[in-house]
Length: 364
Image (cartoon, rainbow, N blue to C red; front, side, top):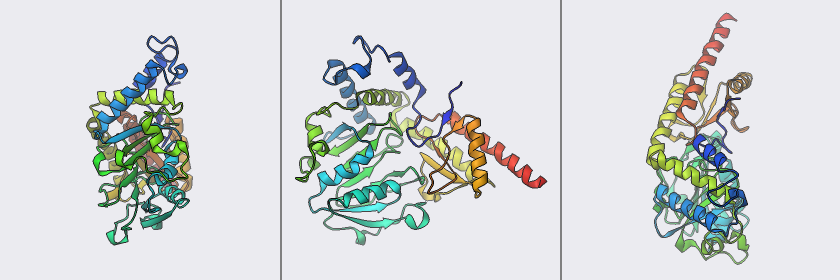
């Protein structure tokens, strides 16, 4: 069986060269005589892996020296609790509610203090990024939280809010896909399974002055200082996921870094949106000005037609296109590892399906 084009929102496709190298090294890594999965996290071989991974991520994202890079377990969802536990002083934070993950971050913060929602796009099923009114910001907020890219709804922040509190961002579905000025943030966190590795790993980039001020009730494992002091080796980290992440970082460097892959991502998105904007059957659901270049939800307006399209697309090797239940229809996640050929094939198939649907309608 041939490999399919996997449009899953996560766990998502990985670059084929990464998978092939991992397969080659599966049973024997370097001169260790064993698999990476068998390496002690205290071994010289793994210490080199994690240190090179950090170096590569710092280089790709141009991370300033006064920021720590942490490789943690628990995915991005653990950060919904870790951020307030570590950053709360006045026990108050501001949030922009732009989707399901923002809602979860808000609810978790409420367990430790107050969460002020300064703006929301829930009124239109999160299909846009709301305009922010600075008068709604809390003058004593400990941080200001945004979800940079909304995986489910296909929207992204194209302009960062101008805030005095540390800006905190969930960057899970946009990290390493486009340039991000790290210096504008207090904390950036991202689950690996969308754009740089397998599930189970989360990268946290945090400004050093925000470390070491956790609330008294913070568990040791949820204290950023615990992991910063130990180089992400306080306990056994997700060793194999870190190894794969570093292979992805190396692959990204070969693509011309973030600038190189951003150009490709913009080409992929333009190709897909260009077709959607001219289609008489398919329609994108996100407002044009806020469209994501990573996640593209679209519908036909008929649940029956949506289901038919997904079934036929799957048979054609275009898989995991079913949209989230809150939006319906379809969603194509076109992360870094999705080759432009995959998007071209999807657009070709959509054109074929549309032509067939129109012929059927004309004959009925």
